[in-house]
Length: 327
Image (cartoon, rainbow, N blue to C red):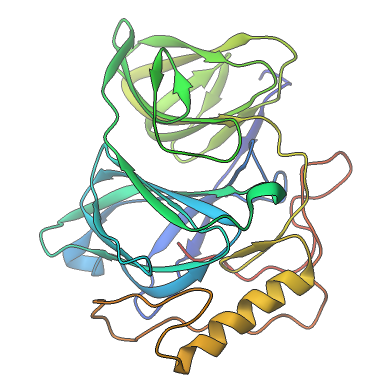
């Protein structure tokens, strides 16, 4: 194994709400909290909707982060408190920047038979944590990136392809599909941490074997370079995620990201205060959701002070108490 690489094995986590579905979570982990500003990586499916009921996540809040939704199969309806009604479809990215506060729901559509995808979060740096919420949609083109390899760049720029969705720190995100035995050199910008999540098949990253659902992380480099991604005999599909090290510590609890225990407590109180209001001032109201419950209540704050987490030397990825994040 390349000693400079870190392999993170997923753990099964039930997504909250009245109809839970199990996801495989690699970030955050005890070993690492972030890759660049990527702070949350959930991988789910292929899920037989006829057997499981699919996804039905009632309105819930977010702040201090952005969500990136990417599907391999199926379709999910997104509704948010900005009034957005949009579909998440395979090969199309939906990026929701929560900023100071937003709420949304996610429901797989009646026509979905197999649900399969990734739900990703980004930390918003302190300077932009309170930006106005926004929603963006983009269909990235498929580009050839080597013999037997193609990619869709949904965040940032790679291989000469650039996504127009707006992020608040230097980042990249792409799906890469490799035919059996194919290899591709992934250009790594100077100072970027880089991670590969394997969706199907198996790959090696700079000679390190990576199995399905595992996340392998390459540390930041002080020069422009590349990592070599090679597929096994079955081919592979992976997500490449990268960015400049965050260099900040945050309190990440349930669906909220803040810089202190008090910020997270205030966000929770604002969401709970909105339960009886016609229009919650901070997180708004999601119209048109028709599920079993009107909204997901926030869990109680643990009986300990929430402490910051980060990737700084000597700090654990899990610093303090955590309630399982939503989607």
